[in-house]
Image (cartoon, rainbow, N blue to C red):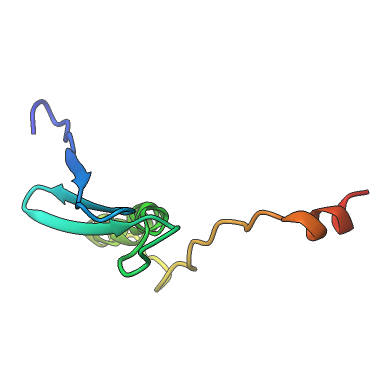
Length: 93
């Protein structure tokens, strides 16, 4: 960490399986699948949401260190689902 700035670096590449990537950060490795398959590993969207939601959870350490009380567990992070076809027509004014 230079001058108090932390720079995170990740690497991603093809696994040789269509729709699957191999990803690494430091010495940790993670397999991610495309939402369209093969659907055995978590998807890149799920990993993105996990990264965002973990920031809220991991702030517990800072709160603990500074004596700030926090609620036990934040609610799950779920993006709104897009309306498709018939649903969109029914909801249009």
